[in-house]
Amino acid sequence: MNGAQALIRTLVASGVDVCFTNPGTSEMHFVAALDSVPEMRGALGLFEGVVTGAADGYGRMADKPAATLLHLGPGLGNGLANLHNARRARTPLVNIVGDHATYHAEHDAPLQSDIESAARNVSGWVRTTRTTTDVALDAADAVSSALGPPGHVATLILPADVSWAEGSQPAEPRAPVPRTAVADDVVDAVAKVLVSGEPSALLVGGSATREPGLVAASRVANATGAKLLGETFPARLQRGAGRPPLERLGYLAEFMTAQLDGLRHLVLVDAKAPVSFFAYPEKPSYLVPDGCQVYVLAAGADDAVGALQHLADVVGIAEPTLQPAHRPERPTGDLTGEAVADAIGALLPENAIVSDEANTAGLWIAAATAGAPPHDSLTLTGGAIGQGLPAATGAAVACPDRKVLCLEADGSAMYTLQALWTQAREGLDVTTVIFNNRSYAILNLELSRVGAESTGPKAHDMLDLSRPDLDFAALAQGMGVPAARATTADELYAELEHGLALPGPYLVDAVLAPRL
Ligand SMILES: Cc1ncc(C[n+]2csc(CCOP(=O)(O)OP(=O)(O)O)c2C)c(N)n1
Ligand SMILES: [Mg+2]
Image (cartoon, rainbow, N blue to C red; front, side, top):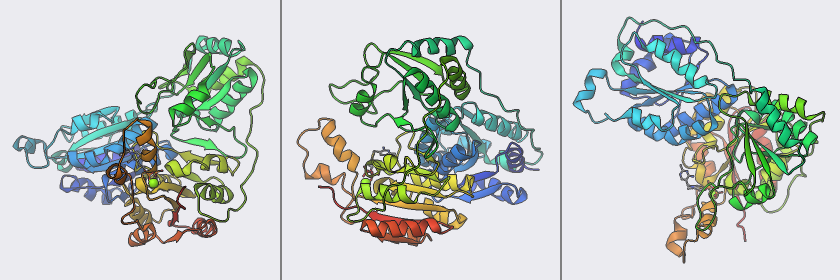
């Protein structure tokens, strides 16, 4: 057995049976080995940002890693933005990067580069395999460190001669590592603060934004009067009718400041203390109010959900608040962001996965879908755009029985639009709505907020996506995804209904009415 075969067999034995690939010459033995290990599914992405974003979406939904296969330093570089989002989401991900044969490196051939340095920035674990006898053990280590807890991007660099040499054999999977129980005295100390009656809040993130964590957090909030807040961009938020609603911190510092105003105690549950996304002249970066004490209930490898459940039992008996079922009316008239949100709220299928990169035009979605049937929402954890379409693709591979709805802003869509081709080829059940406002709208807002002076036509031209207008229905059709354009609320509703009823991919280009 050669190194590549032993590697893939080890991955499969460790539970990793999907590999998103964009290979090159140095990865040909890995590609060839896919045929000798039928349990491993290969899915081709036509740009590395699709590959890494799909692996992120997969890992968030499957709670186990997918593998990637990338081509040397440049391939890794193309995939970095979505690995950055995966790192922020603490997604388990085995990132395999092919390299030149070990003895070829000294010749500094054109594709030679320092892969480890590029990988370290986004990876919790980096290793270059040196010999074919090590490759399977390294693969088992990579899966183990990807799984954590918490999850990591684990980058395994695979020289071509390690792949092709014979004499390897698969390694045993590593035993899973459980999360660490939070000590009683930590829970008791937080309980004491929360029952003090002083203005307090719980800020939940990471592993605590799924139903069990939110139920426990809501019980704590109701027993103590503490406010329940969520991080701005959760990796995977479970929401909808019958689940505790979660007020997420706003993206804009002004909103966050208002939400935190007056607090004396802030308890972090697998979340970071709130900071402004960017620095603005004369504005604070750290947004915890003066005089507010910060406490960490759980972080990193801690069992945040167990800690919340323990806390709920300590602070007294209370039921969680559960969101009542409610859907908006079918929208009509102009195609505004509000109308798209109402159509989504009216039509969202039960147990859907929403990959949300709708950005400014998606402002109304959270409210419009709050009482929709239960669903999972995946958001832009690291702020690196071009994530929504690939993440939807990976989520659909992970959960073939669930409908995936991808809500995608036009500018962000153009970074990784090739994900549509993978959706078509793999027959994935993803309905995409493009929020086509022909603009980098958020940057128009930021232009004034950063205090940039006297912005003229050249500056605005850098943030404008017209001239020419993008035709997303044509682009989708060109990649094998059936699609239509909608210019009114009625058309959008009908197209969305049609797309959601189809078993495969579909795209609606929602051409939004200009905002006055
Ligand atoms: C990888 C990366 N490149 C660039 C940016 C800077 N950026 C932030 S938002 C944005 C434009 C977003 O436009 P669009 O997706 O159409 O959303 P809209 O603002 O119109 O709602 C850009 C370029 C980024 N966040 N990430
Ligand atoms: Mg836009």
